[in-house]
Length: 111
Length: 113
Image (cartoon, rainbow over all chains, first blue to last red; front, side, top):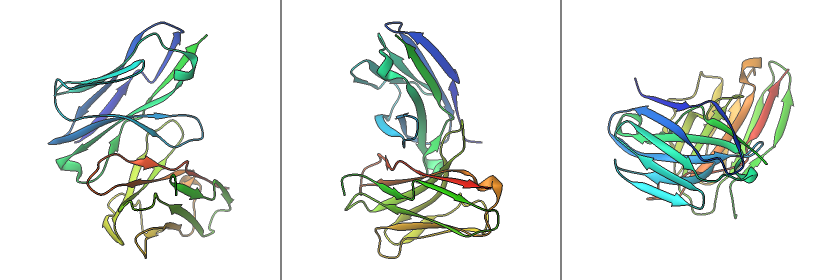
């Protein structure tokens, strides 16, 4: 059965304290792994797409990496404005055109 | 438009009533998705349109849910005989042809009393 699991469910960091969020997946024929950011009361906002193991993407304090079984979203020296829920999604041959989302990690960065 | 627009932003209804939720996608985007997000959960796929036709409706939970996109642009999600379990945020996303990134609207929060 296709699955996307994110951990931890919630994470509290002090400003400047770097950490990583995990997204593990079991799907057939990965076509892409996506990271989205979601603020309260808003829809998810696209961050990154990763297609193959070993690929990395960076944007400001965020870096996403991909292996054959999981993806990490590394947050370096976070700021309070990085507080949000981070969602991971996969698109796979087994899911057709569907994007299958995990339950997200709620990140709080304390000043 | 500049982004995906969803109306209403909030809808409160009584159990058993009929509800319509509207999505106005980014101009020129050919694909449109509906997702449902319950509190503390990730978005759950409902239906996907390519143009005017529903290419995949496997996520619709039962026959009370129906969606249309008659002219290949605006879409309406229709829920008949609403139940308290239908309470959630309904998200719409559009996608440019040949791309794989989804652009989401802010969602319609449905509360069934």
